[in-house]
Image (cartoon, rainbow, N blue to C red; front, top):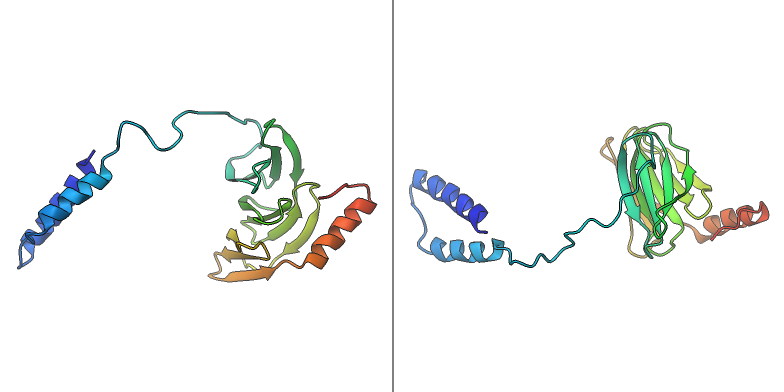
Length: 193
């Protein structure tokens, strides 16, 4: 249980022995407290049992995977340049979003609107899409290359992306744009959300 704490303390003691002051007498109490924290009880506080496997979703390595906020959908991004939407209860693929021209590095659902999904890719592209219909709402190409990650604001009105170009871009999602795209899908028989 406390092996890591013991190793860390021994390393610290050796470092202190090389320094002029030597070890601090209070460190024995500190070491004891660290060992207590690092000990695990017999009951693990996290799932220790495999539940399900979803296979053959992509032809390439899956790089990113996220649930939406109500747990009904799973989005995956892969080196095959596709974003796949999977029904979480049946574990069956529902649709694919094929818009990126390089591997997908990040997929992330909006916390307040279950259907909004942002994906980022190695080519620097950032795509806002409707996970319920597969429709592309916006394609953004501000990053020079490698749009590594995205993060939604807690309210879901903004998302930020970061890239290899050492830039963070912050985007505001306008309800007018999202509802206009949904209306276009409804008129085309898409049945959005």
